[in-house]
Image 1 (cartoon, rainbow, N blue to C red):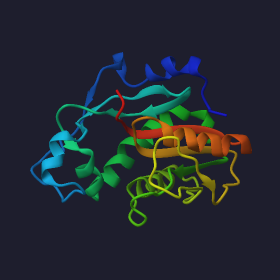
Image 2 (image 1 turned 180 degrees about the vertical axis):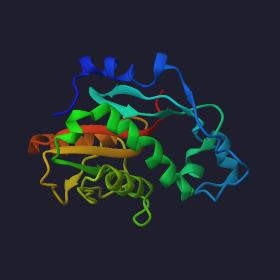
Image 3 (image 1 turned 120 degrees about the vertical axis):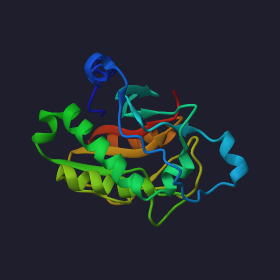
Length: 209
């Protein structure tokens, strides 16, 4: 099951900050950029995110409440540039960890939690989501499990995953770096919910707003 019902989504999203206003944080958009995975001409068409504006939201994706702290924007770095920058792993963990602590509150302190990333598809080594989830797990002092869900293709629509390592903990934070259609998170739900796991879905950037 999902940890929060849809009736709680609105109330949780209103906890984002005083007045639910956008919170400016340190400007990280200096000239420094690393090589991405797309040709330069493709970057004008790519989704972007201004990580200097933080807003916690709880949004249902196909009936699954998903927590995010950034959303896509007109300006900012492309998602390719963000994922290609090693420093973004720590940046995501720095900003997501306290939000997770604040939202889960006593749920988290009760123990029996673990964090699980979305399955690796394109990048089998130095996977961005896996590295962030690992850092968050270390900061929350909860176990981190990789390869819980196994993807056999890069397909993202109508995808189904196979079970790899099943964590013994009953409560799982399911983490992904970006969410667009929600297909990946829904596939994680279909895989793990029938096994009796309580699932809390967290992403860095909501690319569907």
